[in-house]
Length: 353
Ligand code: FES
Ligand code: FE
Image 1 (cartoon, rainbow, N blue to C red):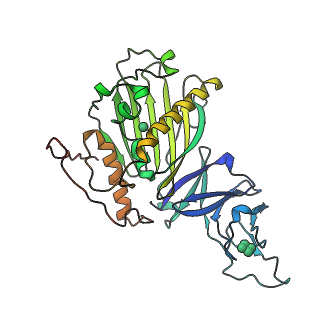
Image 2: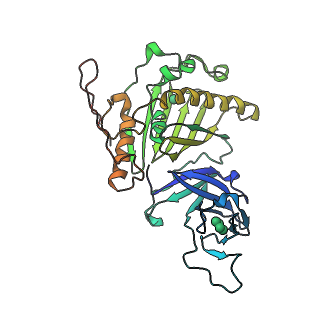
Image 3: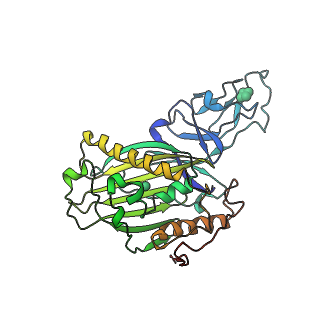
């Protein structure tokens, strides 16, 4: 898991005047919205005797601990200890860590790390958000898996005929045409072409099956965001999936996702759109939760030309580890296991950049 990034940890609408607990990289935080409308993030542990502030309540822009009523300002400073005699000074150490917050795209972004504001990797762009041409739905789901495996599944162009066979039904035609990877400082992107799905639920009613191809532009925004931009190659119909795969801990990922489509803007079509996303999740979950090692290794495994985008993602992770941004034990012990594949050919090393 990597520090020094903005993590979208909750939908803005879920953060209110009632404290909300969130867990990120094994640490507990509490979020709340003060009366000034600003979201506050603090470590969710009272400095007095360790109670969770998420069980407390908000007063103005402050939060009150439910155990003995200590009151904290938005910057984490304790400003009231009810059990003290009037006039007793509050100990200087009576403060809790508070963390930078941004709200963007209807999500609350929490920064955990030690970089000053001007050096922090930016929150990725989502220009379609808020554009009336795009109908939005949101959702969430949980994986018993490390977030890096989840991100990689969203970069993977060769699993669809196998994992999503109901939708694609193309197992006898699974070749992935060569594609280019574009790497930027904090992202890797590739546009892949695929045969149109044979069965596509509601889409089959509006999309002709004789299209020559459809395309998917797949992006990993470091360290935990997937953007999947599908172009159905029909009347400009497109769908964008933007997912924050939150590293809750080393074996749990909570995905908060936004789905945007520029066709069928009516509310009745939301159900179908959400069902497609959830069905896809369940199919991916069955495989991803089986993967060993749990964390994507930075060396080893057999990455082929069709895996170039995952290779680029691993390169970006490695750069962050080399900067000293790894937290937890994920990359404490490198896992190395290189072998040739069954047909005697060496793994294809793919260069990206
Ligand atoms: Fe929070 Fe005592 S534990 S006030
Ligand atoms: Fe998938």
